[in-house]
Every structure is written in C-alpha cells, then in structure tokens.
Image 1 (cartoon, rainbow, N blue to C red):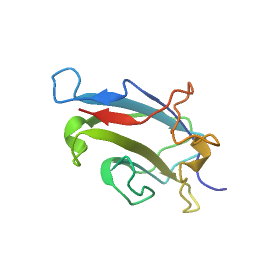
Image 2 (cartoon, rainbow, N blue to C red):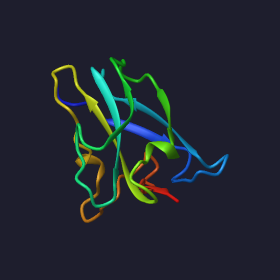
Image 3 (cartoon, rainbow, N blue to C red):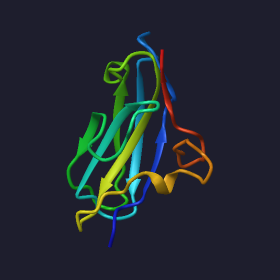
Image 4 (cartoon, rainbow, N blue to C red):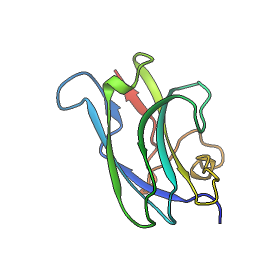
Length: 124
C-alpha cells in the first residue's frame, strides 16, 4: 500500500519571538490511514529525513481524510535565527514512511503547500 500522501496548509511562513508572530498553525490530511505522523524542523542546509531534526509534533494512528492541526512555535526552532525546513512525515499501515521528495518539484529546493506556495519557515 505504501506511505500516505499528505495535503497540508500553513498559517504563515515566518516566526519571531514577537507576540502574535511566534506560532504557525499547520493542518494536514492524508489520503490513507497513517499509523504515525511526525513533523520535524531542521536548519537550512542540514540533513533532513525521518528521525532527523527537532521533533515539533507527532500523532498516532489517524484515519484517511481526517484533518489534524498542530502549532509550531518559535521556541521549537532551536538552532538560532535563520531558515528552517519543516518536514511532514506520515507512516503507512505497512510501516513505510513518506520521504517528502514527492512534494519537491524537479529543480526546486522548496517543499510546497497544497496551493503550491514554497514552505520554508524563517525564524528571526
């Protein structure tokens, strides 16, 4: 069956320590049941993937088509000011994980939201 495909949206792409700008809300749905879900943050240029970077959100089993929502706070981006890759990983019932590469257009370094907007979070 393979790993679930994700569709997601974000409330903003920049974070700071200023009140009102210190959180991003992320909503996602999967096209099949997720056995597990993780959101991880890595500083731009650092290696990323399942199990790498700072774990900023996780969920257990989630049925297909059910929307989950979570928040990312500026405090979660622990490697200082700069650009961070916020990666979403979903595990299928067969144990396989998506690897984000299907969301990266050929020739682009950006992860894209459901509306095609580049998603690379900036802290500072």
